[in-house]
Length: 300
Image 1: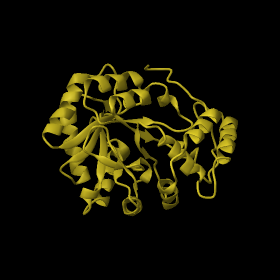
Image 2: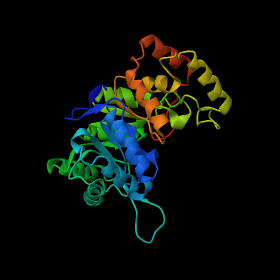
Image 3: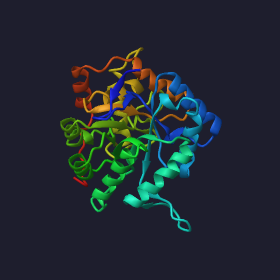
Image 4: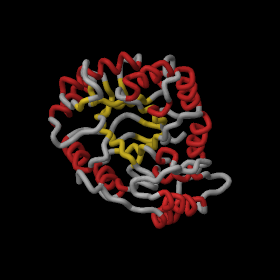
């Protein structure tokens, strides 16, 4: 599996990682899927304290026991559960980040996190304090690098200008190309890596699955038509899923794509994209020609 450097950090990540959110809560199954991913060259595992109320971090921790050194472990912070209240509240304060990281470390069964990410963010946050929290954890050796997981261009712009983030996790696929307008060019200019979330768009671009509903920018009939156009670009050695993942990896700012998987079949289909040659400029242009460019309407 090809590895790419994450921004200016010392981290090198597999170009295809595993988004662990969709693994489910069945321990044996989740551990098996993570183990197979690692055996097949995946090094980047992405989780969050939010997923299944922390259970996802626990499962990831159990799965990497005994081979921690082979993993680039990424998790997230910012969503806080307050005892006695339903749901989660947003907290990007320095005090909360310094506290929450200890809980994540315990669930993950490790004494350091490779990539610690702010799980969202707004312009109303105490951004300088948030950055200082990450910088302090980095100085202390608790984390190796930090980033943000956001689709808000205005927030991304602030962190790109004011912090030492290594990466921005951003939703990016053939059916969600909004990042191409401003976010990806900015990250390329600043030497910050993008991690492409949702490259197969929750199965909308997966091989062997017919979407039952449309997407924000695509009615169901439009999505079906797009899939038809994309199938003309597939081959016996390059499925629709693999085409989609290679598209997300085709932008020079993207260091890794992290499709999720809830079954071994999905995992193997996604990881097979590592064996597919990168798309040519002509192929990337052709895909852009049949899909919508999109743009962010809010938080510009």
